[in-house]
Amino acid sequence: MSNNYHRLLKRQLKKIDLDDGTLDLITPLLRLVNDAYMAYDRDMEQVENVLEISSQELFQANQQLKNSVESISGQLSKVAGNIKDVIFEMDLNGNWSYLNPAWRKLTGYMVKDCLGKPYYQFLKDDKGNDFKDLIDLKTHNFSTISKSFKSQIITGEYKWLDFSLKVIMSEDGKIEGYIGAIVDISKIKETELALIEAKEKESMANKAKDEFLTTMSHEIRTPLNAVIGISHLLILENPKMEQMENLSTLKHSSEHLLCLVNDILDFNKIASGQLELENRDFNLNQVLNGLQSIFHNSAKEKDIRLLVKKDTSLPKMFIGDSTRLSQILTNLVSNAIKFTEEGKVMVDIEVLGVEGDSYLVEFVISDTGIGIPEDKKDKIFLSFAQANSDTTRKYGGTGLGLAICKRLLEIMDSDLKLESQVGKGSTFSFKLKLQRSGVTDYQEDANAFDVKSIHEQDNLKGTRILVAEDNKVNIMVIEKFLSKWQVDFDIAENGLIALNKAMENTYDMILMDLQMPVMNGFEASKAIRESNNPLNKVMPIYALSASTGMDTKNQLGKYGIDGLICKPFNPTELFKTLTSILQQKYVQ
Image (cartoon, rainbow, N blue to C red; front, side):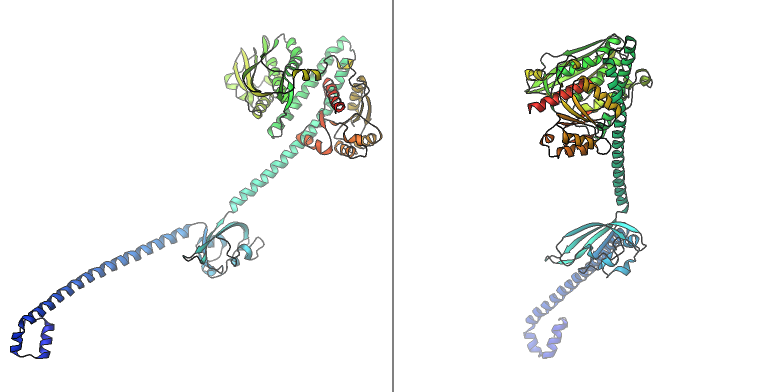
């Protein structure tokens, strides 16, 4: 037996104990078996080497993975630990299973003392009771929840919390638990509540301001009505020549004071967003004629020309707010005359374009006055501002006129533009889109008022009017005018007397003061409308009042009042208004 055989082959040959002859005979076979054993050993050695290397690589990879997990876990713990908001995990029963360190800062509770316990033991309502009904974990009919509430923490102080919760679902669609966050929104809520309180205070202040302006409007307009009315009456009663100048000054001063009051009240309406534009048929020629009538004398006194130039292609009748258009033009022409010492003031109206019944009209008001410095052009459009500090002392005014014009035009989707040179004059211009009216010129002219002296007309002769007014001076003024107009009238010193007279007599219309003792004008008007007399349900009732606020106007319809005639009134305008109201009544 060869000593070079593989150890396993030697062991097997020794066990079977063959003789030498047999061994020699099978020697070729034994060599093949020996080679196979040797090859097997080599293969096993190779496999062991490979396994050793793989084992080392696997060990290294496992160590790297372990280190990575520890590193990520450490980073996440740091992140969770530094987040100011509470992050939590909750099991199906509502017990805390995880809380980050922000929990203790928020509530004062130790994290370890809370884990495994119900959330509601640590979240209290604003009365300090357990917040058991914060979430309903029994129904599971939600995927996310978000609630804000006021909570009492361990120290007894209150905090506003924003609580959000989300369901954790397994791959097979089953709920495994909940995850969420709690955010301290106390500062945000305090700011929000402070803003709400500030808004309420602002609302109360605006209401107080409106009430103050309404009251002051009434208190100022009531004596002013007497001054203007009596000045008209005195002028009509053939005064001596030496008295005429004084009466004219009185009339002019009282009307100027009324303009100042109106400017302040109008500006307040615009600033508070209470101004509403009207859309009514109006005659542009009448607006322009009225403008010339108002300023003819003041221009003549200063020996300057007032010219009105109108595009011949303009129709007479438009739809819009003629009152506000007149107000804008009046303010601009008044300023132009005020600041012009020689030369002229021109109002130029031109058509820039026509589309169907829509006209684009440009209004240009130019003067040859003192002009406005370049650095003052923006300032003059500010409220209560004028170009120079001595302007008010020299020329008068509130500094509201241009601000009102600009705001009115903005409401009309337009803008007020200015070109000016110091010492040469100023030009103000604006463009308006005006809708042509369907009312024909003939129809409008048929309704036009005869412009001869109102005291020579008998439009109101025999008309029965009930006047409810408590102010003695106002009663005296209106009595004189109604007497001149041959009106058959009764006076009621308060609303209750007015109600009784309306029940006992038949009137063509009622003029009702709103602020009266015993029963105010609103209550009296409502009672008259609700009375058994069928004529009182359709008879015109108009408020004759110094209160002109939006609140007052908005309430008129609720009490059956058909409209508002403002005090102080211009006698001519009052005559026209009463005639128009009664004409409409008779047509109906």
